[in-house]
Image (cartoon, rainbow, N blue to C red; front, side, top):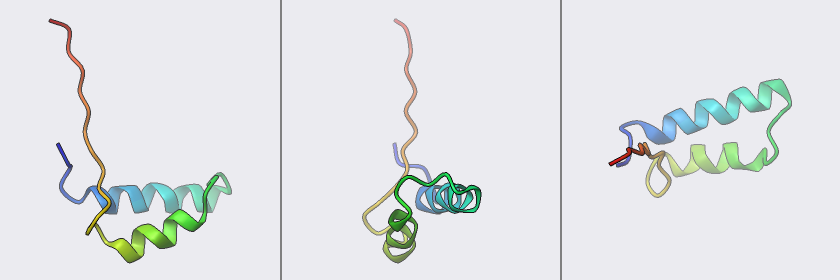
Length: 50
């Protein structure tokens, strides 16, 4: 399931990494901003025990 505004969440996370100097792939921030959720999203994954 893709989260609504998932790409925006991902961008905010990458920007926080940029500010902290902890972004291993700094080029991703610009790519995600340019994509604006058209192709890239952020999913919610939940596991359960049956």
